[in-house]
Structures are given as C-alpha cells and as structure tokens.
Length: 260
Image (cartoon, rainbow, N blue to C red):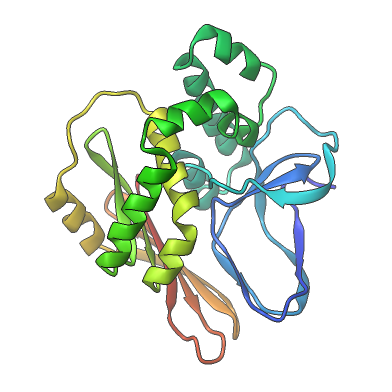
C-alpha cells in the first residue's frame, strides 16, 4: 500500500476515460486522479498515478473502492495534481478548501465537519449540500445542461468572481453532457471557497481565453495505440490535451486549460 499508487483493471469490453480530478474513495485514503488517460478494454493492472485528498488517514475505511459520484475535485485542487505532481501542494489545497467551507457555514453546522480531513466527505455533507443548492440545485444544473445541448456546446469556460480561471472542452456535446454534473459541482466548490470579491464575468475575456491553446513549451507522453497526452505551457496558463489513438477514434477527447 502506497499513498500515490492505485492500480486499476478494466475488465469490460469498452475503453474507459478517466479525467484528472476524478475522486476515488475508499481504501486507506481517498485519492484524486492526477492526469487524463484512456484505459483500453480488457486490460490491467494499470498504475493510475493518484494523489491523496484525505490527509491524516491511513486506515482502511472500506474494503472496496468507489467514486465520489456527484463531484470532481475543484480546479484549485486539480491544478497542483496536474501541473506540479506534488502531494504536499495537493494537501495544502485540500486543507485550504475544507477550511474555507467550514468558515462559511454556521458554527453549529461547521462543528460536524471539524473531525474530518476528507475532501469528499466535506463536499458530500448535508451542510455543504444546502449551500450548493443555492447555486440552482438539480433544476439549475439541468437547465444549464439543456442550454448547452441546444447550442451543441462541447465545452465551458469558468469564471469565479469575474475572473476566468478554467476551461473544459470535450470531443462532443454528448461527452460534455455525461461529465456535466461532476464538472458543475466542481466549479461550484471553487466559487464557494474563493470569497465574494469581484464583478460579473466578461464574455470577451472568455473568448480570448479559450482562443489561446498553444504555448512556448510542450511535453508529450504517449501510450502507443491508446492515447497521447500533451502538456502545453503558455504565458500565464497551462493546457492539457488528451488525444485518443485507439482504432477508428483518432481525435482529441478532452482539453483542460488553467490560469497560473
């Protein structure tokens, strides 16, 4: 058992897409996947390359692993895992996020979260669910999804307090739709833990942000015949592109862009 090692076997007849930021619960610690990847059918065991998002626990809570389900890690937690590959920095982000959530809750509700360091448990708790509901809840989530589908959108640009901070772009509207609940909840978590200073978002800034996906430095990792992952560094931003190399699917699957 190692903090940053979790292996997966894909026993199905279909390829599996995993995005950086997806949270795996259970075992001795909850963990977050550190990089986008495609797992071919009937393959494994494959080392996923994970980071702990539950500092302080190294005792098995369950004999099985599962998914956080309704949420991915928020952008400020995904960023150090993707860009720095630094466990300490991921823990710092988790602690800061959990502390900010607790400080924004009534004292009586925050007490219940004081005994956990688990990112997943904090954001799946009843007090936090109440706050998330203020951002529109399930109805708001579905309304946005209907609008995205009607416009055949394949991605979103995210602004918090008027500042563009992130973008997720997919190969198709259908793929965006499948990830939408998890993504939206991760964006809400970012808003909940970022204070309230700032104005409304600027659509022109969003257009400029998503229009720049190249940079001065690019590092490419390839799993031959399965996927290619590119890490592009630009002026004040990083872009991560995942391209499928599987037969009959040679196309870009996901792009994540973050400010730095």
